[in-house]
Length: 157
Image 1 (tube, rainbow, N blue to C red):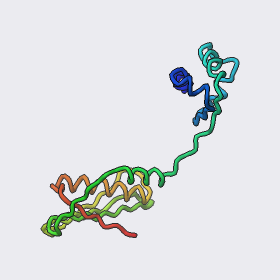
Image 2 (cartoon, rainbow, N blue to C red):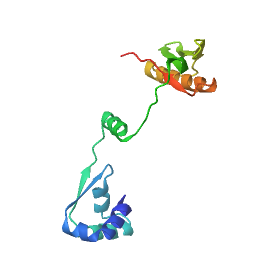
Image 3 (cartoon, rainbow, N blue to C red):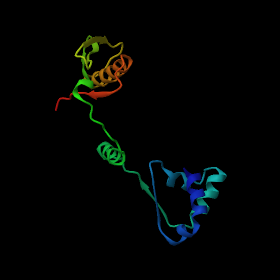
């Protein structure tokens, strides 16, 4: 991190000299550069960076919802509507108990045929983890059965 800051300061020297710089980091960079017992290279970099008005700020964590909103806004996606007779249906349910965890999966083909699967996981999982695993396994199984056109995955709200 210190090397990245030094290289950036060298390349953007006019900007670093004329403006105060805020470095957001989750590492103790200021303390590392300020230690007198650090290696010679770090001391050299600390002296080089001391001519600039640099303040070290803690990096704030990004909220998961803000990240999800950003991705959904920046992603262009076109969804073509398939006719009702081409849709595959995927119903999944995961469950976790003291005895173990597992999932139930029902895939309905466009012809109305139900493919039912029951899976017992070989690992401990929370209810949410069992649900996620059920969805992932259900999508893989549906893909292997030839479902690659249009999907309808009902959700409970």
